[in-house]
Length: 77
Image: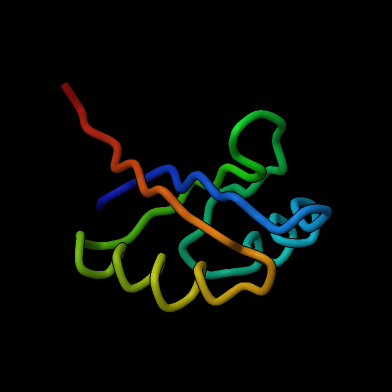
């Protein structure tokens, strides 16, 4: 199992609707609108790195209103 936090920038005024839409995607365990340099923070999990990449690129980035994402894989040190 691979986990990651996806930091999302959205169009102005779209943070809440983007976070709500992403919360419905399979593999997303939480999705919250936040303040600061990013507009939403998502926690996602997948079976492997390739599946995680597909989740982010094909499903999350397809949500209307997203302008940029930054994927931060979780490491267990």
